[in-house]
Length: 83
Image (cartoon, rainbow, N blue to C red; front, side):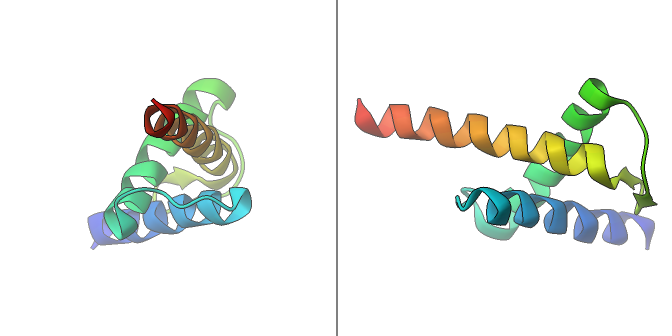
């Protein structure tokens, strides 16, 4: 049950990051989950572990990391589409 809870929270974090930036994450729900997991990892590397924990994620660093990830991915996709 803990793994399913982590998938749900990861998806919500990825969805919120896309919603805050107004950009879609490629891959739909799976893309949101991946962005949430990678964002949590990136956020914990940059900011460490602090704030509320839900489903094994430090929410604030995970959200900030997911926002950074969505920005990077959208920049790369935009430059690839231009070329």
